Image 1 (tube, rainbow, N blue to C red):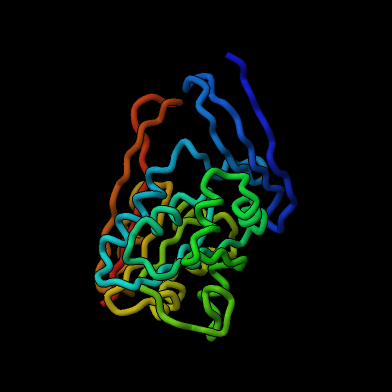
Image 2 (image 1 turned 30 degrees about the vertical axis):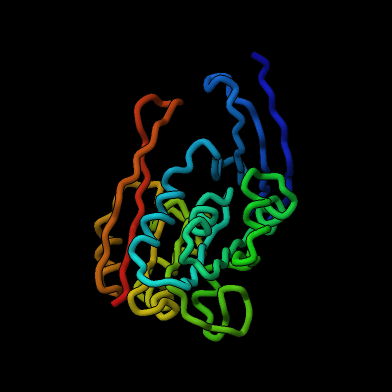
Length: 240
């Protein structure tokens, strides 16, 4: 079996050099994988997407009604966003992404789900720093002057509440940071967070000081490299 590798894009960003790679995996019968690296660190892979999908499904399951307005922090390879748009109750989706090349990959069709996202009129891809938007009054998630409330915010940017992609993101995972976010969510709405780490009891307690209640779900998925299963955590917090 021939091993194939292609670097689809490489760009410098304020957070470091970012690259998009496509390769076949001989250990998986030549399955085509898309991978993103930021500097020397693997950021995401199309092989491990179950938790990103469940972030959307679990989060929207907790939101009642129709004509839902949803925000996602972090575009990645688009699996959370596409899953949100599969829900017929969703009226609008804003995906806030700080790395402009990631948005470009979707608009140029370099990633498998790009065309599906950019062709959906409900979906807006906004180039902005999610954490700056949340901490700034009078700024909408799409960087407009509209500060409307949304029904759910789903966040998948940092590795975990205590392991950040950028040290400046740490202020979000505090009492004030979460309060700023809660002010942007409708009563009865939900905040969902993906984490690569096991559940953190301290973070769950912090969520419960801001929101009416919180819970976490451990999402398992096969890991063919390590054998057996791996897991991620999805936190959900409910606004009264």
